[in-house]
Amino acid sequence: MSRFDRVLPAALLVVPGPGRTVTFVHQLKGPYAGSWLLPGGGIEPGEAACDAARREAHEETGILVDSCSLFAVYEFTGAWEQGDYHLLMFACLADRAYELPEGFSGHNVGEVRQGSIDDFPMHSTDLKILTDAGLASYDHEVIERALAADGITMRAHRVASTVSCG
Image 1 (cartoon, rainbow, N blue to C red):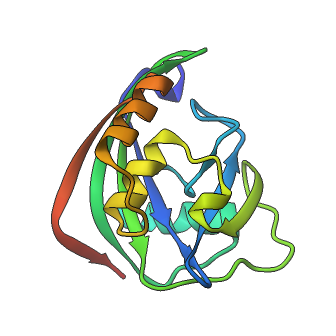
Image 2 (cartoon, helix red, strand yellow):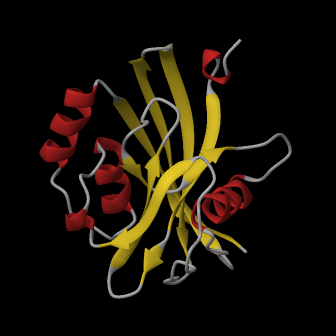
């Protein structure tokens, strides 16, 4: 049985960098392998969503985020070569800008970079997430067309007020 044979709880962390940059990882595994994504991954049993987001960001980028806030929960459904998937993604925003540590090699990612959102071929899910985080302003129709082109259904469940995750 694959971990994608069930609804998979996951968490991501939007990590701003210096000078209006954002932290991205080049994903090597999973349905979005080959894409530049925000750092994140599966939530371990007994782990709080924000703790998972901070752990995954640390493993993938080397950045140790002090605190963050949960701002939305998303459901992603789609299909890839291994079958259908359904992710329940908790999206958190780091409390401040962080710099990448020199020479860090991320866990399960090909590369880690900080740059302007215009510097990356944006994955369709990140268009919505970065807009909801207040770091981008992609048009709703642009987001919907990109998701449809990727065969992804993305439902957003906004958190009424941000939940601090210290």
